[in-house]
Image (cartoon, rainbow, N blue to C red; front, top):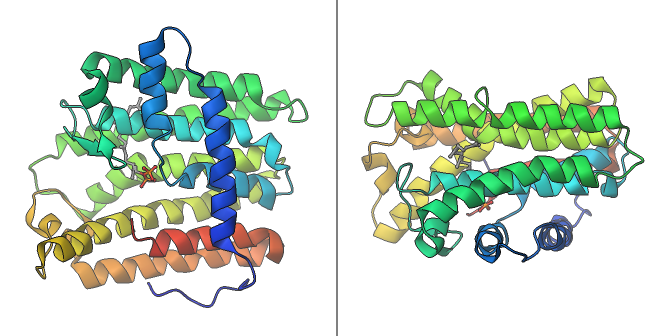
Length: 304
Ligand code: GRG
């Protein structure tokens, strides 16, 4: 999709992302101090502070603010969703999963610390993510809301969420995958955590259930959009690198949207999903909706 005229051209999204990401990085640094046992904390910090885009934490904070919450109410949760994102990445890169050597421009966790430590670093981050939100969410958020948010987070990660997506992904390796199955994989592997980031931000920010569910719909579209754009970038980037018209992902046996739909139709699909951001513009106060509308724009047009 091409960048459209956003309703809030005066909103400086680049500055907003930079400011929020900086704040999240500082909070993450403090949440996982270098303490004994040193090696496990080094491994946790190595991947956590390796400079991801911080899309999930920023979505969480923006969602808290769109329903009228204060940013501080969602900072621990913003850290938690990034801890979970990082742990899934550490485990996904392991030799028994995707067997990747590089992530976020650096050697993968198991390449630096060894497989045993990488598995444990992932486990420790997952456990800390729940502890952190339970222990550090400020007292002006009701315990009911904290419990509800933790429950959302747990279901997004577990056997009905991320793990379910990863299981089907593994099972379908080397097999012909239908569009329906591909959607299932991505909705679970990618969208569930993006959705939890948005929904938990709104719950902790004091959002009414109607608004929380509206935001859930927005997040689902953003989640699939994120993956379609990821697949398109894989094709266009590898085409650029190889100097070819067809990228390596169109040739590999990994199922992707461009492979199943063709590149043009995949771009069309991304455009349709992108239009869903209008849901926000019609439901929420215009100035408060700006960050989440621009986040949809960023996800649709990102280059990495
Ligand atoms: C959750 C208990 C548990 C186990 C993990 C390995 C696994 C099960 C699931 C895989 C999930 C996975 C790696 C999904 C892909 C998600 C994705 C698109 C990650 C990349 O996100 P970006 O582009 O990356 O936001 P940065 O580095 O910017 O954060």
